[in-house]
Each structure stands twice: as structure tokens, then as C-alpha cells.
Image 1 (cartoon, rainbow, N blue to C red):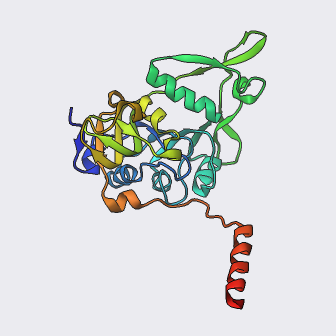
Image 2 (image 1 turned 120 degrees about the vertical axis):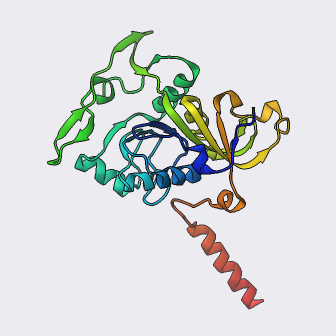
Image 3 (image 1 turned 90 degrees about the vertical axis):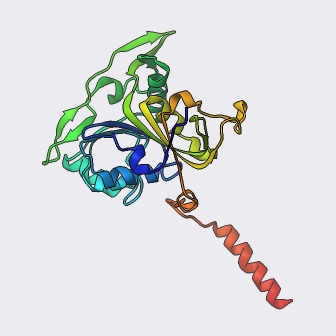
Length: 267
């Protein structure tokens, strides 16, 4: 029952060339950076990745992209990752763009043993009708397009058939976890992590805090250990590494701060 691995290299050691991965995170929130870095260092390529987005330039899955290790991505958006966009538009990378809610449900369905389901999202668009560019040719034309999907009517409304997603492995990041694999996620870092964990046949979780079995109450566990096969406890420095993708400053707060400083000087 003790699922703890001592090193990241040991935790991801059997991920081989051509493996499929479900990876948690949203932007830079809740991304399993330590496991991704270990995978980068180990070197397997031709990876198929399922993730909401594919990291950013130089962070998260972006480092695997830059190294040419990923050949296919199923996700919701490209975001601010310029290398992702470049590889997609140049034909180096196959990309299946999927509505975000549909992607979440496809992962959850895979973990729940549901092979497929109908959803109204995408009816009347290329999502259902086909034709979305999965891979471009070097000249910019569409080399591989998405196929049309089955559409049925329920209660007078069209619904498109979507298939569940399961992957060889899943990489996730959690705030707390015990040796049995029970996980707790912190606020927004919960995002796609539980869903990715459910979809992986072998799920590897990096945790900021490792606790003993019984410390986590049943009602506070977000993902039961039945979905997790390996646990990696992060160091304090690794757990504290939480970059911000887009740092913004409120103009109003700046103005209030300047006024307060002026009043203090006058006093």
C-alpha cells in the first residue's frame, strides 16, 4: 500500500517512447513540473499528451515541446505558447483541439469506465461536422482534418458523440497526499488534476506535503488513492516554486497607494 517513490526519475522510469500521457494543470497552476522535468531528462519521445494546454515557453509541458518530444496534443487551447503555435502551424505537431468542458468529461469518463457520451457542445460546428485541422502541411494547407462525428437528437436538441480518453500514464500535482495515494488539491490547482489522474492507467502524483495514512479525513480527500499508483514527495524548494504566467497590477490600487504616500509626507 506504500506508493511512495524516492526520486522523480524512479517515479517516471517506465514511461517509454511513444507513451500517452494525461497531464494536470491549467496555465501554470497545478502543473506537475518536477515530474515533467524528470521525463525531459530521461529522454523518451513521440509522446501523445492530453492536457488542457501544453504549458508555456520554457515551463511545464513547454520544455518537452521545445525538445521535440511531443508528437500529438489533445487540448483546449494553445494559449501564449509560441513554440506550440509554431509547431502546429508548421506541421510538426498534430493537435486535436477540444472544447474545454468536453475535454474534462472525456477524461472523467475514461476514469469512470464510460466509453462514450453525447453532449450538445459543438453541434452545428466543425467540432461535430469535421474539418478541424489536426495537422498542417509545410505549405500551410490542412494535411489531416478531424472526421465528422455522430449526432443524435435528445429532447429536440442535437448532441454529438464524444469518446472517453484513457492514457498509459498520468502526471498530476497535489497539495497533500498520503502513502496510500489519497490526494488533496489546493484551490485552483484542483483544475484538471483529478480528471487526468482518473484517466491514466498508471498515475504518478507529486505532492507538496506527504502525510501518513489516516491524517487526511475522508471528507477532505478530493481523489481517492485507488486512482493513484505512485507518489513523489517534493522538497520545500520544489513545492515553493510557483511561477505566475501573467502578472498584472491594478491601476486603482497603485493610485490609492500613491495618494497614501503623499498624505504621509504632508503629515
